[in-house]
Image (cartoon, rainbow, N blue to C red; front, side):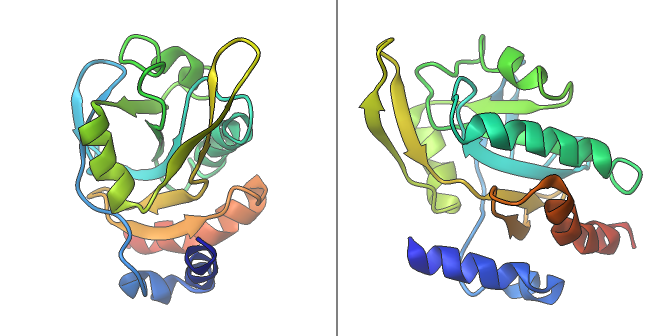
Length: 185
């Protein structure tokens, strides 16, 4: 895990690095969005994507990262149309019927993706995301430890760069702007 964090940090340094990550990250997946439609890593509307693995009812890191992603999408709208996307690590609770409302409270265009454990595992493996139940809260809900990077994907779903969620919106925008500018050229 530390190796991945160090390598990920190195990839943030320069847009040129993104053309050849020193490790495999990203790949194909097919999951279901909150509207019941099949979605792959490619955005059907040709937009860049901010991708995060979490769960819609999380009150920990996700509750900080999801609004941050919404703010980034709004703040860079003058430069690029970017879609915020979350792939669930909790498919028992994040179903097609209930994943959307908690996400759209952050942004109207937020896409929530869920699926079978097998279909989700394909996405987890592609992005080297691990998830683990760390405890059960007093209400009986499982609390997960999971990957926390935000991935900037091009419209076809290729990973351009990684953004650690410990950054603020302005720092994240500073990291992703050169990639969005390059996409627009």
